[in-house]
Length: 306
Ligand SMILES: [Zn+2]
Figure (tube, rainbow, N blue to C red):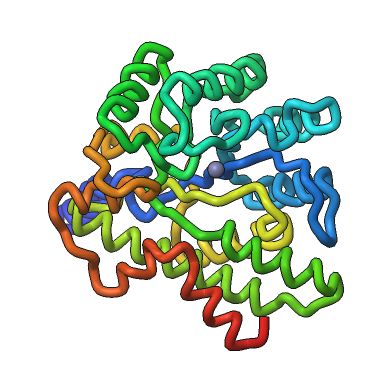
């Protein structure tokens, strides 16, 4: 009796040490939405609805990082944004026109953030979270320091990404193929997308263990596009099938790793890559796939004639 009690308490302690939000957990964040542009196969409301339906089916609470000039600032596009708010998702800021901070000055960039904020700040689910466009935080010390000061003064969080994906690149390929032939068989792109997500999740998990000695609560980047309208359901099933727990963005951002502010030597990448560069770490085996913008998957698709 004594022995089994001890064993039970040791097990409880071990489970406790893993922590609810730390063991292979990730949050879903979706940028550049809602996108009211034209694509093959689906209208903008259909794409928006399909993405929301997939999230609801898997009971996932995600964050939408709004680029208001992609549609939300029009009478037709605003209801697409409201649908996210009504469905209980978090609403964050991703500027008005998606400028590149490396190309514009600090004043122009902060104006973009404040203009987007005016549109989104009254919506339920609104969070003071800024997702930098292209994940670029400035190419001069003045811009980097200026943005940090701006975020602090405005009470904004830098909504970091830890798992960078190149879903946007596969989406370009998907739209290109379907524009030529709306009835084309695109199942190879679906397969490539699922493999891409799987590879990125596993590689960034390994990077997390190398850099932090543990599984951080990961934040995965995706985009509001046709690719996810068609296959987000499958992607979420894949992630769950890998044994990962999908947590809310707020739960993920509570991980102390997201309080770090590394000097980012290379722009436009995952927080984990920035942390690795600060430590002078070279790329891990296979790490070139983490910074290749999806070239590997595109080359594989080209071999299949797509
Ligand atoms: Zn973006």
